[in-house]
Length: 490
Figure 1 (cartoon, rainbow, N blue to C red):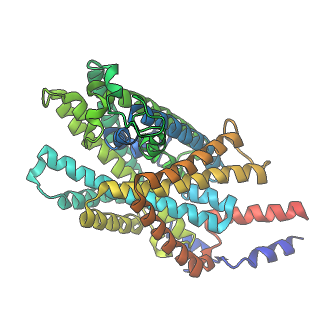
Figure 2 (cartoon, rainbow, N blue to C red; figure 1 turned 90 degrees about the vertical axis):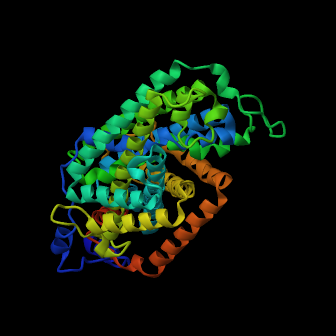
Figure 3 (cartoon, rainbow, N blue to C red; figure 1 turned 180 degrees about the vertical axis):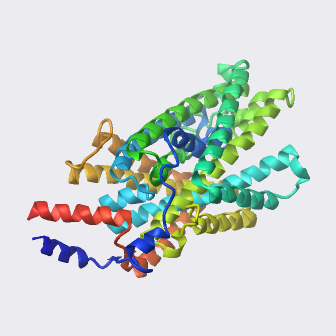
């Protein structure tokens, strides 16, 4: 019976033995530093991914749906992320590898599902840093720092400096990220205290009503459709938190620390979203901040011009952008590392240095990000492309949870998602709704993302699916699951 199972597994055309002198040598050159991050650093990483979204970007949703539309969208997207995070917490205890969402989908949906998910995550984590570094450049110019009048030196400096920190070591990188994130969070709390002293509930619904929009009123000035159009901007309060499982191979006791870090970081982000949203719109009115590049500063200044607090928040906004930029570079490098180690992407991209950092996985996406930022300067467009990729990955990760719960109900699950399949089903439906909403916001960005997806899928179909590495952790997990399934059938 075992011989029959082995024959069926080896007949699968994709996985192949590891090259470069065998499995041991192959993986020895592709090893991350284990045990570098406990639950506190992982929680900081989860908040760092997202915190820049509190300082800017979400407010454009006011122009799409008004205060009521964005509020409903934020609640729905918050529910999506909460359901997704609880689902990922379970999956990360089953498969604690650097593959994160790609690894979960590989186990549940096969090689195609794994590649589809991993590619979507890569789109998010390569494009988002490119967008954020443009925003950093805008902040530096607006603050008059270093006498710069062009953004590209800032872009280059950010990529070189922060990739350098990541090359130094993951423990050092995550500690740096935690410190910068703590500064940004403290600034948001200080901002809220100052803004709430000027709070006026009447300003929440001061955006002019579009009488022609279906269901429009003072709380939904753009009508019911405005709620849907505001989905991508409600996501900005949470976008990226799902990347915590990418640190699994470098975590201390990932089975315990991953669920804890995911839950706590999601709770912190929900609290920050609530106070930032109400404080900023209530201080000066939704209409005043809906198009601002720095809505928190606008909310504090009003007609009186800059104040000591608004200047502080302006500088703190730069810290928030740096925190997200820095952590998203980390996430992109680990996703690229896992995909290339398993052969889905060119294998050389997963090589690690003596300090156990995937140096090519850091440098090459960084070079792409810098080139995109310097060539286009369009941070909003790139962030919209990133959101498109994110929504695809959310749907596939939620689907993976559903499939594994149904297909492998007896699988050892040290942590179980509250609500089970119902929870991941909510995440799945809301993720698909958010995916459709991206076309309402920026059709060009959605089609650009689809074009990138098409090229990646052609590469996988024509080349890499026949060159997967059987000894990669995600492939071994999948092969073991298939063997167990065959045994149970026989």
